[in-house]
Each structure stands twice: as structure tokens, then as C-alpha cells.
Image 1 (cartoon, rainbow, N blue to C red):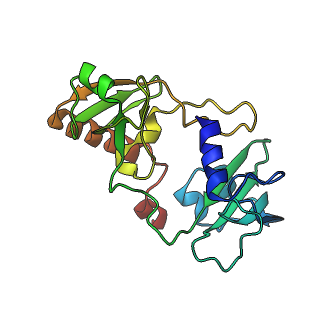
Image 2 (cartoon, helix red, strand yellow; image 1 turned 90 degrees about the vertical axis):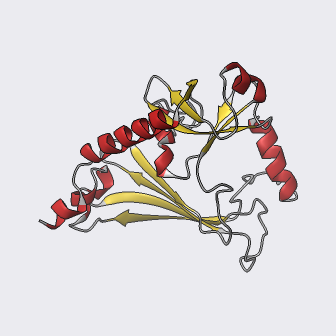
Length: 220
């Protein structure tokens, strides 16, 4: 599947372009030092926000996969990727991409499931499904589609209400050490609307309890 995605990106961008990435092919890499404000540590436990300066690598780019795409193209999009090099040898990555179109095709995250898998689990379009893994569990509405293969479910991470990230693990990619959050084994079962509401409310309350500090306490 990954090869098919790259091939599709190359086709859109008139490629392949040997020696260049399939997307964000044109860019500039910079190095610098990031120093957080004194308020940052009150809002987050992130290592790069605890007060000490942190070395950073930044890449500014055009989103296009064509290395000669003009900067003036309004649809090209812009990218800024930041890698914070932490004192313990680990790193934190942040990626931002401003676009002139809405990034998500749906107003909420759906769980896409193949018709065969939906039938065996008693799931219909719009039903609530419980998704659980060894890391956690969440609920979201079902979209029945043959866009996914049997035995595979798919969802996006666009909206925090879905809590899709809670089912992911701490595993990382062998080549880049990036979190392997896009591939996780899960169980899918049908739940009632009431069960879905209860599960989502419980998860939101748990997340709020585990936040290091809220904004009101930060002002205290």
C-alpha cells in the first residue's frame, strides 16, 4: 500500500523525480536554538518547553512533490518541520502545513470498515463502534466502504473528540524512530449510542484529570 501511495503522489507531481522526496520536494534546512517562554512549562510537560534552550533543526518547504514548483503557486501549500534535539538524546518532531482547503474530508473522524467485516460484527453505516487495542480504547461512528481491505479498518486523527490516538502504542519505525502510530492491531465491536456517550465522556474526564495543569491553575 505504501508503494501505491508514493506512486500516486509521483503521478500527481509529474514524477518520480530522482533524488527528491515524493512530497515537500523543494525546501530549505536551517539550524537554530529554541528557547521557551517562562509560561510554557505551566502549560505542558513537553521536554522542549521546560525552560532550557534546545537545539533545533527546521525545514521550510513547499508541499508539492515537484522540485521546481514555483513559490507563487497558491495551491502548493507550505510546510515547516521542526525537530527539537533533547538533552537525553531523544527528539520531538512538530509538523505544520497551512492549506487553502479544508484538510479533512469529514466533519468528524469515522471508522472505515469493509462491508464483510461490518456484516460479521452487526455494524451498519452510522452505527457506533468500540475500538480497543492493548494501549487503550475509544468509540466512533462507522463508515462502511470498500476503500479498505477486509480485516483492515481505517480512521483519521483530525478531531480530538474521537480519541483515535489512545489506541496507538509506543512502538517506533525501525528506520526513522518516528512513532508507529499509523499501524495498530485493534478489536472492533458494536456499541449502543448510550455506551458510546458513556465511553467518550469517561475518556474525556480521564484525559482532563491527567493534564499537568489547566490554564486557570497556570494563572494562579
